[in-house]
Length: 473
Image (cartoon, rainbow, N blue to C red; front, side):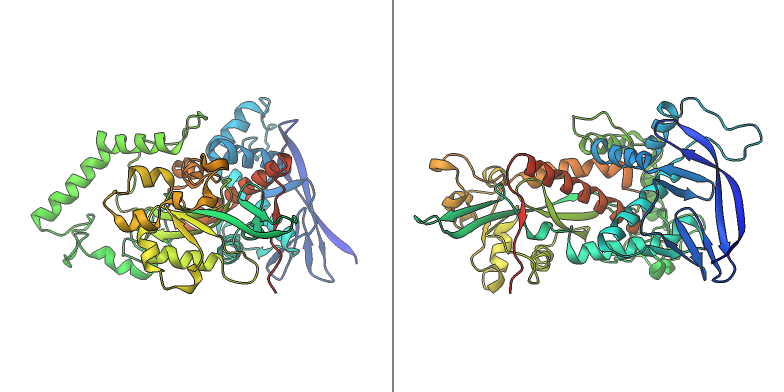
């Protein structure tokens, strides 16, 4: 192979130890096979193919390179302290750039931007995922940077939606599963528990009810399939055309409603709502704060409901998006989907706040035969009426002796773990509530994966022996 053409360009390399550095990027071209060889990938036929083995630096944009250690710093800041991409960039520029400036006449700035952080996050995450799957990352060479990796992100989102988070569906350990043995020491049966709960963290979505088509822009009210509704009055039940530049028709009452809505968006009521979101979104163990109260939240943005099913040590097994409402029938189907196939082990108990309704719905469903459907202890005591005889008789966790602690004191499993995990997950509301759907799911899935790996590492360190169930025959 003869590499007959070489091109060089000035770039900036952002390092962890030495700050930003001026560098030269060289790519080579083979005329015989018509392949361009770049630092991280090759280009042929309009397709960019990343190398299976990557160097320690990543090309984020044409003239921007980052050390992997810098990218990992950004990911860790997002992971453990709810730091936005903008604040990650600000952190580097203020604390790690060492005050360096680009040389005179150098066209590349020695400054990281939020877009650089996001692009680095996406590229390295996709490369790590492809390495685990033993495949190569391929993306189009042409087009906008944000669009080049979109299909790869969608494919990964679908894979996680279908198969869950790595091996977590088959996970069990001494914390979430109790093994029982006979007098001879032979294991006879097990008791495992999962908790189902939801948290309202989401992105703008189409105003049309039950429409799951993503928006093409996070400031749009309707998805492309329903864009014709933009010319129709926003008041429910009114089909009159809108006044140009407005969202309602000429009807005085409808104009008044729109005016009131705009007033709320500019008033202290809107600011108080954002302040409440900020307080809920960031628990007391961090000073992170990313809420912009100067910009009103898009009035037609609907938040999505992301439901998490997890074991009893904050280890999310799977997630699903429920738009606008947590339908019990949808929860039933979600549970079935999570434990479908031969690679999963059905739990013996499922805690869910609305198991009163769910248990009635599945009483004749063979899938739920032998599964205890209890309500979390706190909810059972505080939010379920004593006059609800069905709930008292069928969803009381105290009726299941295997859930009780030694000598009947306390509880063997933490049924509030989902609420506690949602406190962590809700911290990302101010960071991702304006993301488009595919980026939102990609970002949240990666954060959950990273958290799960840390949790399993902690389980090993504490001697809880995390392992996976054998595949059923």
